[in-house]
Image (cartoon, rainbow, N blue to C red; front, side, top):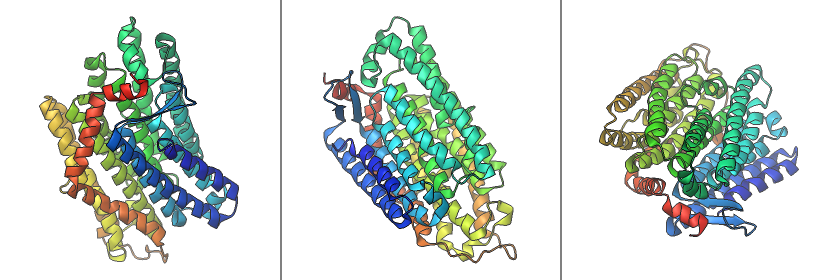
Length: 491
């Protein structure tokens, strides 16, 4: 039952919030309580996985590979905990950051449907249900993105919907052909059957198809253009939710399938991932350098640092995978914190153009800290968590002899530092333009989550030793998936 709670809790919360209708106070209370319950259930699941290894539930009593399988290894459990953390931060932030009109149109219900879809994607044990959970979270994200009906939202939403529907279509085609060839879609069963298939050329083609599909969802080069066109348009609470979780589901799908199923032609698939990672880093940060709006800068930085998250997969070593796990944790926390802080900046300054903002260091020093720490962590400055995550990846790359991608990562980190220092100086350090400050009072419902998440990179950096124990163990499970397969198939 512990394994199903991270899916059942947000499902129940979404249903109750829907039944609450226009009783705004009730729906808000349900949303925060449901998010807190999700985090608690995620922590319980993590404890069970840490103590007892991969946890498996076969729905309806049907043994794998015939039934619907839910499975949690350490990677899944860690990501579900982060989903609960982000969900709680966004739910609290939404009490001050979401207007009553959006709440009346089902914002809190959609928030928890999306959290349910994300947790389902992290916990499912077969490819078809991974597709189903992708569609659940994407449908919720489509509506959240367009909720409010502003012109920029609709323009960004059209691009977001179109490209993600294309990715889903490619995913479904690959799933259908794979089932016809292997006779199963259970991922543990596929790990055993795919290497035995006679038509390995078709397997390579399916791997390429899934690389494109998951690459679109993860926003890697050259499939990323939809993200900076869409993520800056909705309210900051929605942007933060998307920035922290949605692309990471794509990265998770890449990590799961290309360490468990498609490992027969590593020289082709993983080298392609490695090259894509290096280019994604550089293109994303160069795009950020060219932007003059706060959330557009952050959107391009999402793209850039997805490159770091998939770098460990491209290296395909035990150290590389451990570094990828740690970097995903760091990236989820940092990007959620930055987007939440950007929403507070928007409330205080009334604008997001860097040349129209200034002086916020004097007006809100805590906000300056809440932005500065995760921004420096994104750049890899010690002793913040981003430094240790990048150090792990760079060491793995050096050990693998991948000097070109190391150079790309170092250049990206330097350029990221330039971007975030320029952005912080524009927003917080330079004097405010006369008359640009707004007489608004930003509630602690918005400030609190921004500050709490903003301090986490420092806490993670100071606790890098224990954090790396968890990441290393998760990396070992990805590198040697025998325990995962045995837990699911029972043999």
